[in-house]
Image 1: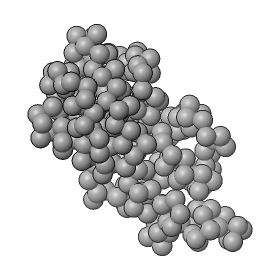
Image 2: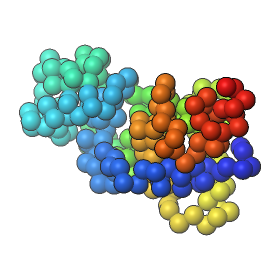
Image 3: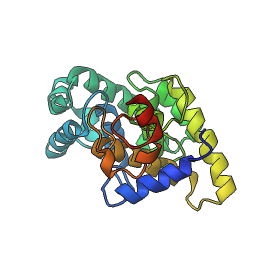
Image 4: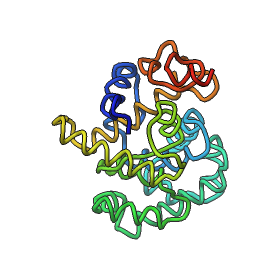
Length: 239
């Protein structure tokens, strides 16, 4: 990790830039809605998920019992705006069966976080990012979700693993964050820090650190960035 820029430095800069922005899963989102959203957002934009959630809500199907009672064809139609709707309806059904096997969603989310993550990963259609989002934002237990935005931001800052492996990025972030928290007596509990950090990264990459046309002039981290349009030393070397 760069000695000149710590993960908590980045966190503080992101918080200054994006604290005013809203986040759909923070802090009091409905746990079932979080789980459904975490599955529906796979390979699509959140705006499409919002349309699907609105349709489920209008059909009074955005709760565990009501969704379980839906015919599969009706569930598919309700989640159609999220894309890949047949596959996502099957994934939701698999998740509902997982919750049912634990005596309901509340009992499932009360499972110890490591075991909960294992149960989620063993469920068809749920990968690492989805599982960690459910653990963090629905179960409200410590878990740090990693995504393409995470890799984009830190790679541009010259930080993080060279690979694109989820586990390597998560281990790198958790190891350094936990060490920095102990050194600086950071006041936020780990779960709250992980939840807000992921949210800030998503907001930063959606609003400023975009893939092809980032708004570098509005970014506090531009002097440490390697993107060609930024003002950092890495940008000058690549320009």
